[in-house]
Image (cartoon, rainbow, N blue to C red; front, side, top):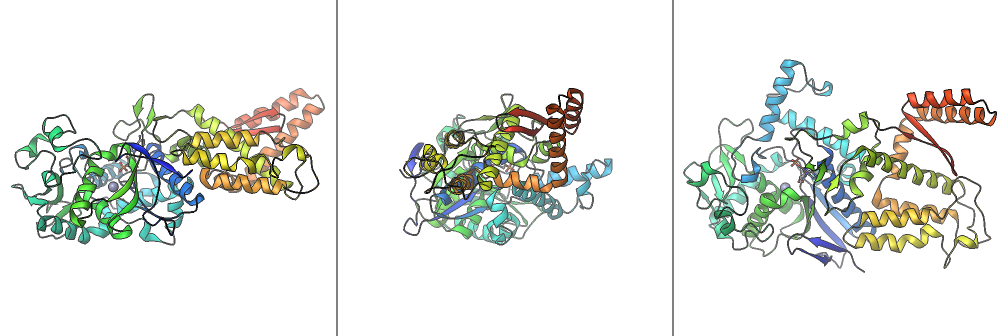
Length: 519
Ligand code: AMP
Ligand code: ZN
């Protein structure tokens, strides 16, 4: 079976075929963060699902050119109405930092930022985003160290945006309204509304999308959206034929995707709130500017991460950042697994219990990995091999099939766990006399981990704190020795000391295992 993906554009699951299928090359554009604050784990749910899709394509033998932009200008607080009303989020961040500086509330690592310099503000949050993205194993965040063009900043592409707006003006798809703002004329593009269902007619009748009252009289149609806003007072501004000002948020992505990946691309991703207006507007701009019937072939959207029934968002204040969770004792590997394990087209509900379960799951896999490595040269016994391979090796096709079924990550995890349970981890393993080895099983586990991406993060977390790990292992050994001597008081004291360090222990068939308590 080939990979099947749900395409928001056609509203059905479709077999995936790349434009350049012959060379197995895929072009993939992901809408990245607006760098006006720390990204929250809701944002990361979208970015991580895009990462899982990319890794799945790579596992299937595709070479993926993945671009994720950084929005550092033009994303307005009122972006639902798509016409430049509201305030630029970067400008807002600069103001907030200035206030925080005055009241002494500034994060310690942001002390040197000049809040009047929006580039410095954007830079600070871009680096924070990259640190978090690397800690969660986003491949693009590692790749960008050698290929910075893969994470373009919108501010570096403004002249190209002016050029595209000019093309749209020349082709009759854009106009300057009485307020001096350049708008896209949605009625000039027949397919407007195809992605989201918000056609110009539905919008006019008030059924699709929100409209802004203030600009209703100025625009040709309430759904027309801003391409360029002349504003000599805006902190970040550029020259243009329509006056000094700044670009709209949607034009940024059309330009960066077109410049870095080509006029027609394979995949485009974002969170569900990007479908309208952002992606609907991107399609209109790109198709009208290039004259091509299609911009992106497959549209991939992740549903929201919710907390107690509500979307996790900055404006609601019900959000956690990666840093918040790490400060509470969560590991990046557990955060990653918790954010990818629910199907991307269902809402995921964030809970600390879920995080704790993810941590335990990863510790079981990490133990399995260590154990397989220890006995990697030993041949597997006949009782564990079917058709020449061990349980993990033989589960690889089912693991891939689950991912190919519209990225069924939970199914893939189930396949891995079931195969892993066939090994009696911890003890001296049974051996056979030839054929497959425990090392082959280790290799199969690593293949599965190329998509899940958690074992490497877990190893990093452990390596990061060798001393603490040694201390934990020593305390567990002390407790078990005390138990063996029936010295219950000493055993309980050692366990309590571990609890105080934030470590919970559990006795099981694999010996004593430990995990961090997530507060
Ligand atoms: P922003 O930084 O606001 O531009 O958002 C970055 C990405 O996160 C966008 O693709 C959003 O659609 C996505 N996003 C925002 N909130 C959530 C959420 N609660 N769950 C999943 N994705 C989200
Ligand atoms: Zn975008």
